[in-house]
Image (cartoon, rainbow, N blue to C red; front, side, top):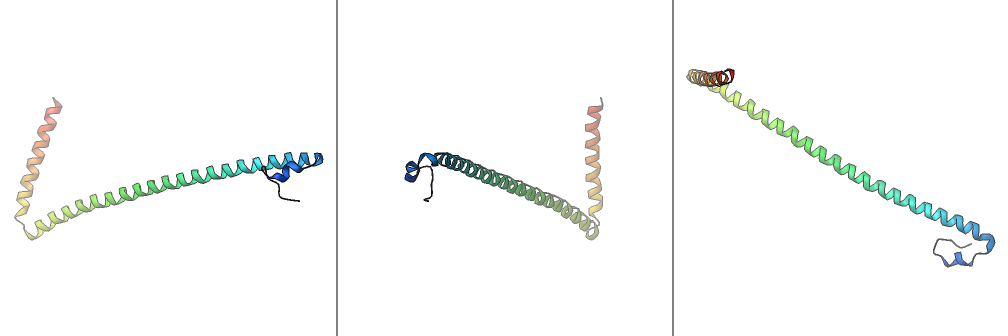
Length: 115
């Protein structure tokens, strides 16, 4: 028996007894087409999810390295201040006076808001 598909010429030459089988074949072919469409949709959705996950991973990596860079700069600045104080003790009174000026400015700002 030849392979029957929806558009095959052998389908039109079937006898009356074979007509129910032909209808069943058409129904199965339609179901198969719907299944293939659903599989294609699943593949497209899966690709979209993978792309979104890759974007989130990229954002997370940038966020991580951004934090490392930020705290690394702070650590380097503090280390530089400590090294300056160790190797050049005359820096200590200068840093103290700068700190005192900053504290006075901060207190005066707070006094503005307390009133």
